[in-house]
Image (cartoon, rainbow, N blue to C red; front, side, top):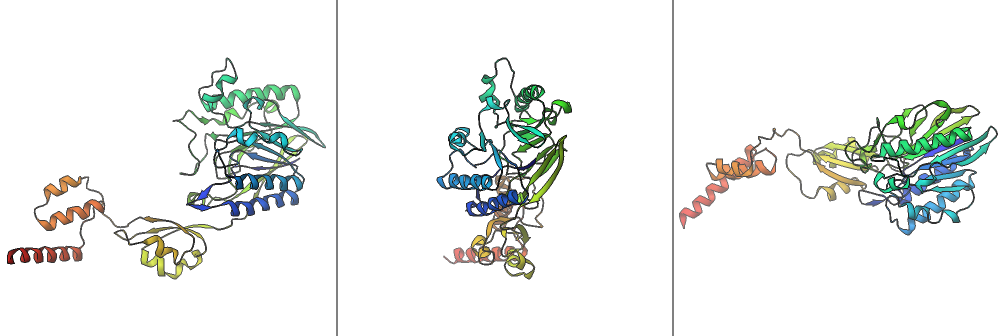
Length: 389
């Protein structure tokens, strides 16, 4: 059986204020083409289908079109809800979907598999929707579920008990933050409180006879492998400059008669590459070395000592897809720890008072030699004018 593991579509998410729906539509169209070309039997979407609990109508249209395309390509589809999704909204029309499309949003269904057979027999797919301990602990009387690790571990025990009775091969699907992964700052919205909601790898592993042959995880936006059979696929689209160096794609997993046979990475196209460029503003606007970046999504970091006038508008004249601008000056002295009021009290002249203000707004860097000269000239002119009155 061939299984395509994907996750974190985040339909409806913006990128620095820019809509991503059209770009995602193209990437998911390619995903459906890969399903057809690789004769995929089952597509797994491990949570965060939508980016918000109340997606716009166009988001539902894209999801419907994509599920139809994957089904037409010959695959059955199993979708679970993530922490961004509203389980109720994602699952409300599941009974109306065509045969072979399964949407798992009910925590109580976690221990009951969706069974799909191939020439070697049944494969049991256990979908685990995102589980918030405070919201689901009442569902299992007697179970002490105070963290997400404890909750996932408990549900995995239900899965193992069920699997021990059924026998055969199996796949578990979950949406969580597993211990040992590297998150992208600012991308995966926190589902942790301290370390309580980090799920240890041990929750998914156990005796080979009663553990899933493959665990398809979602929530982390970058491809990661925690063990041979526990993996993240990441998001199909870049949603942050922190993801720029991370490939986009999915895992093509093959099960043979004995269980997991292979897991191969399939790249997805990147509609527009992401690039962070850094130099003085004048260099960013004129230097030929940045010609290749003019069609990329750009994060521009200009290194001038002081903030420059209207940098975004000026940069977008060259980089049409400049998405964000950051002032990251170089060569500034280390902050001296003085507050503005202490700098003012220490000033012994008007020139030192102006210098104290500049040092405050420039995080420690006072007036340059040329600026100091201009300041002295202005103060002298004012003093002369006052004396003439």
